[in-house]
Image (cartoon, rainbow, N blue to C red; front, side, top):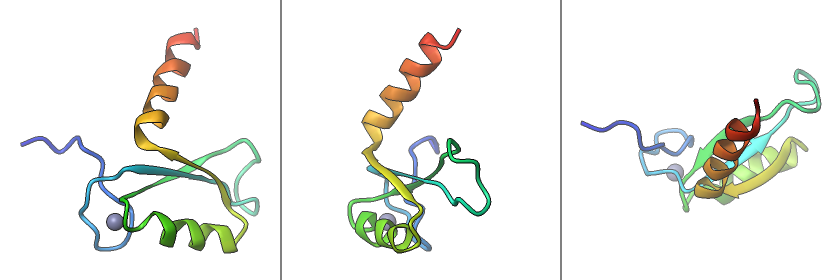
Length: 78
Ligand SMILES: [Zn+2]
């Protein structure tokens, strides 16, 4: 079994994630802090809207790009 493939964060959804939604709740997080939700193609808009109406959504990035960025950061971070 391979359970490494990321799954959509939407409630009850078991689809493979394609998007990363980066968000920040200014009431509880410092401004540079980023929380992430994963979304499949179907739930990207729903989850984006949920965060968007609360002014918490910062970025929506394809999962492959997000992981490439993370790899780049860890490669250059010291
Ligand atoms: Zn989904």
